[in-house]
Amino acid sequence: MPRFDYKVAAPDGSISHGKADSPDADALARRLQADGQTPLSIRPSRAGQGPGFIARLQSAGLTRQDTDFITLELATLLRAGLPLARALDTLKRLADREPVIDLIDGLATDIRGGAALSDALDKRPEVFDRFYRNMVRAGEAAGALDLTLDRLADFRRRARALRETVVSALIYPTILLVLAFVALTVMLTVVVPRFTTLFNDAGRELPWLTQVVVGAGDFMQHWWWLLLALAIGSGYALRKRWQDDTGRQAIEQRLLALPLLGRLLRNIEAARFTRTLGTLLKNGVTLLTAMDIAKEVIGNRVIAQGVAGVTRRIRQGQGLAGPLADAGVLPTITTQLLRVGEETGRLETMLDELADIHEQAVQTTLKRTLALAEPVIILLIAVFITVIILAIVMAVLESNNLAF
Image: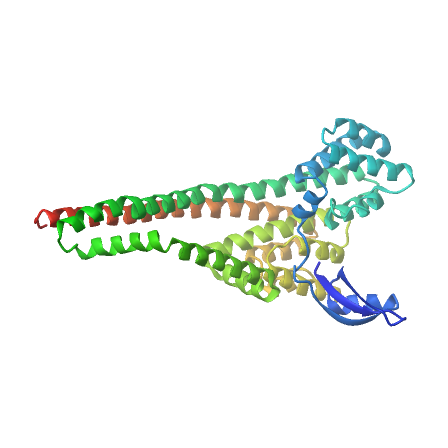
C-alpha cells in the first residue's frame, strides 16, 4: 500500500507532520478529517512504500527463514492436536535464536491474555505482513487454523524457490562479466604499457590498431578516477530516479517493453500475483480483499497500477478476467485461463495452476536466456582479448620490418 507524508492542523491550531499508509490521498484525507484534523498537504512519501519486508524483518532481528520456521512448526503442532498456547510454548523450546524466542514468547503471552492469533500478529506488522495476517484471520474464522498455516508454509516455500531460481540464474553471468572486466583491465593497464615502452624505444610508428589499444590503456591508467566517478555518478542518478515514483515507473515501463526481459518480468509478477490470490481465495478471503492484498506483492509499479484498476472495476460488479485482460499488464494466458476458471467455478484451482505455469515459464525463460547470454559474453571476451593480442603482434612485426 502506498505511503504518504502529510501535514495537518489540529483544532487548537497546532501544525503536525506524519506518515501513513493509505490506498490513495483522498482516503487518507477522509481518515484525517474523521479524526478531527484538517489536512494541509498530502503527498507520496519519497521512499515510496516505505521500508521493504526484508528491511523490516532485519530491524526486528529476524529473517525470512525464522518466519518460515514458525509457520511450518506451528502448523505441525496444531495438526497434532495441541492447543495454540501449548503449541507456542513447545515452539519456543524448539527455537534456537533469541529474537525468535522473544517473538514466540510475546505471541504466547497475548494468546493467554485472551487475544486471537491474528490480533497478536497485528501487533507485529514489522514481522508478519498484511497477507500473512489476513490469511490467519480467515483461517480462524473458518476454524481451520492448522490448514491455513500449512497453506502459508507451502506458499512461502514456493515463493522462496522462485526467488532462489532467479538469483541463482544470475550468479554465473555476473561472475563472467566481472572476470571479463578484470582481465581486460589487467591487459590494458599492465601488459600493453610494457610492450608500448619497447615499441617507443624502437622509434617506429605504431600500427593504427596498436595506437587505439595503447590509447585505451593510457586512458584507463591516467583517467581511471574519471571512469570511477562516472560509474558512481550514474549509479547515484539511477538510484535517485528509482526512488522517484515517476522515474521508477518510466524505468519499469521500458524494462517491460524489452523482448526477452519483459516477458520474464511479466511471468515473475504473474506467478506472485496468481499464487497469492489463489491462496487467499482458498482460505476464504473475499475477492476484493484478496485483490487488495495480492496487489501489494507485485514489485513492478506498472503492473501494480493495472491490477489496481482491475480492483476498481470489480467493485463496480464486473468479473476478474475481463478487466484484467483490458489492463493488458499480465501475460495473455493468465486472462484466458482465468476466464475459463470463472466460467467453470474453479477460479481458485485455476489460479494455482496458473502460478505453476508461470513459475515453469520463469525457469524456461531463464534457461534460454542463460543459454544465449553465456556464449555471447564468452565471445565478447575472446574478441576483446584477440584485438589486444593482434595489436601487440602487429607492432612486433612492424618493429622487425615484416609485413603480413
